[in-house]
Length: 114
Image 1 (tube, rainbow, N blue to C red):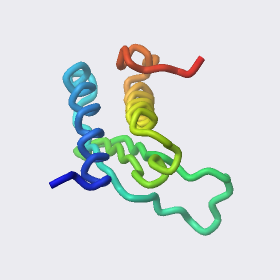
Image 2: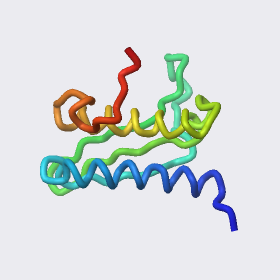
Image 3: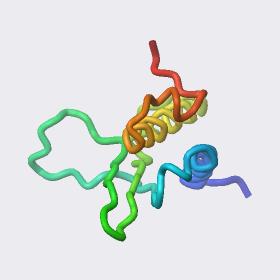
Image 4: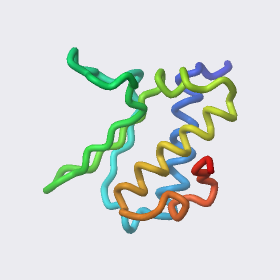
């Protein structure tokens, strides 16, 4: 049975997260990763873009939550390679934000698109 697009997306996220966690678990602390189909956007949303992810820092006993929004990400990608690259970019940039370091230091595959 072939995996559904949702299952393939989840597998891709898990692969990238596993690589990042292997490298940075000692500095990241407790992070919950998730995938949702689309963000909940308030009616008064002013920007013309739809968020691709959400990062909510944990506090106290609450873990940090990093959620990717599958449909807006897929919508921006024409090929599987585009999807792989965008998921990696989003996760690396969010983890870099959490750690306060340059995204290129998080994962050597990161390409800032220079």
